[in-house]
Structures are given as C-alpha cells and as structure tokens.
Length: 301
Ligand code: CP
Ligand code: NVA
Image (cartoon, rainbow, N blue to C red; front, side, top):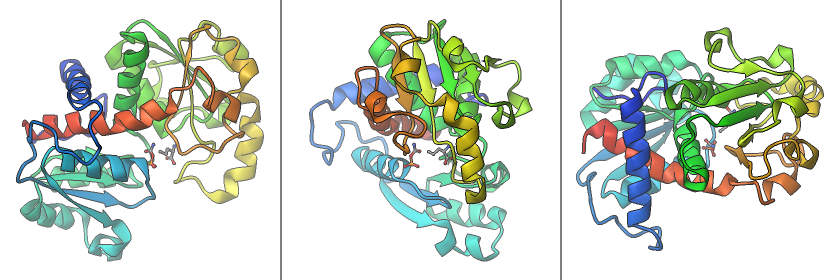
C-alpha cells in the first residue's frame, strides 16, 4: 500500500518524481478553465474520500478540484458528521471506507489517528495535516520555489516564528531535498526534539535571514493550539514578524512564503505578503498540482 504520510517516510526518488509529475501536469493544462478535465484521466472510475476534522479552504478545494480534473469523484466528509466523531474506532472506519473508496485523504488532530487509518485501510491514505506535520503543503512549496528559482538543493531557507507542524515538514524536506534550514523563533516555541539535526537555530531573526534564498512563516496560533495561549504566543513571537526590515536582510531576490491562512500584520505584514518577494498565491495554486501528482503516485496510475 502506497500511503503519503510524511516527507521523511517517502523516498528521495519518489519525492522528486512527484514534483516532476506535478510540474508536467501543470504545464499540460496551462490556460484552460479550471473545470475542464485533463487530457489524461488516470482517476477515471476512482472514488476519493476527503475527511476533515479541522477547518480547511485550500486543502478541501484543491483536492476536490484535482480529483475531478483527473476524472475521479470525491466525497467531502466532516469528522463530526461521521460515526468517527461519535465513538466508532479509526480502525473500523478505515476498513469500512476501504470497501467504498479507492483513496482516503484525512486532516486530523493527533498523528496517531492518521497512522491508525493507514494501518487498517486497504487503500492509500494521504496526510492532509496533523498537529505534527503538513507534507502536502511542503511539496507545493518545493515546487513553487523551483518554478521561480530552480533547484532548491543547497539553498538557504529561513523559518521565522512558531516551530509548528508546517515547520516540521520543512525540516523533513531539508534532509530529503538537501537544502539548509534555519529556525528563528523564541525558545518556548522551538520545534520538537525529534527534528534535531535537520536544521540550525539562530535566535536573532535579522542574523538568521542574512543571505536567505527563502523566508517562510506561518500563523502564530495553529488550529490545535488552545485559544487561551493566543496572547502569550503573540508576545513571544512579535519580534519574529516578517516585515520590510527583516526581508531587507535576506538576499535581494529572496522569496517569501506562507502556507495561508494568514493573520495579516501579525506574522507577516501586508506589505510583504503583497510585495515583490511574495509567492503565496503560487504556493496555494501549486497545492492543486502537487496533490494531483501525490494521488497518482499513491494509486500507481
Ligand atoms: N494551507 C492550508 O492547508 O490551508 P487550508 O487550511 O485552507 O487547507
Ligand atoms: N500551522 C497551521 C497550518 C494551517 C494550514 C495550523 O495547523 O493551523
């Protein structure tokens, strides 16, 4: 069973093949209306379940559109509407869904839920974000960087802010795609220890971004973080805002990324988000193309 659970659990050649395939599929349908089908219909006859236990705009719409462009059908399911949210086990849910659908994408809280789904499903399972990682996002981000600047290998990527789930997938990608990753943020919000060795830390954001090819940030309060921590996090992270002063320390042609949704003028200023360094909407578009390639890879079609 070929699941797409994380970047560090997918081989380097497979990750590269997915990026190449995403780029080729994007090129092949350039300029067409979004609702038209691709020339190839590799998901013809395939049914895909998209399960959301957390809110989503990009993941929900890009997976749904991507499946339809490739000739498949989708059902979008909310965790709370399923028996899953009312006591049915993940293992039973996985075995039941596998009798109806050919592929499962799940966005959930605990990583254990994703792993149990993958263990018991007899169809491929894709990680659409957990509290720990967000691999589909980072595949789109690698694709986006390489579209604008060529190979990411050997480049300097700087993450400014919370050491969260999106950072974790960047850390996994740093090893697999061989780029240098620097984390700058307050010590209480350091990435989890399991990521040690995949990145370096520089507490001073201005020093961290010196010579950066790419500067990345994300929300200061993630969906799994308690709202009660909001004020404390804002106080801890204020000095790590990506603004014009900070970007001025990076390379002149550096890119700026944010997976979105953003809280404008908190983690990044609107000036940066809408300015010449920013590729945030290319990232969002490339979710579509990257995930189409991931689904094809999972299904071997
Ligand atoms: N970046 C991302 O995953 O966005 P959504 O939460 O809207 O899916
Ligand atoms: N870190 C954010 C990413 C949202 C796409 C969260 O988990 O809420």
